[in-house]
Length: 81
Image (cartoon, rainbow, N blue to C red; front, side, top):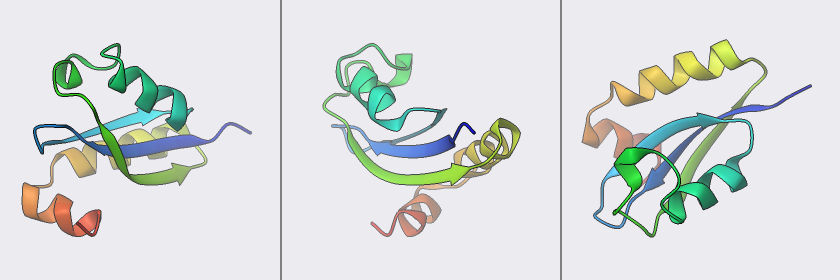
């Protein structure tokens, strides 16, 4: 069974980025080397600050969307920052 993850990283400029992956370590490393999402390029280094695991891709993608709709204060509360 594949694990599906939603993660939040903190970029060097203090902003948060939320994404989906099946391999958190690999994906964070991609962001850190500038090979991840366009948003995180130039905002490295990044720091993994939150993960949530799901049993299905659809559940993870739904949660990713929910997190992306949160404002900054709500995201800070989510990640206990």
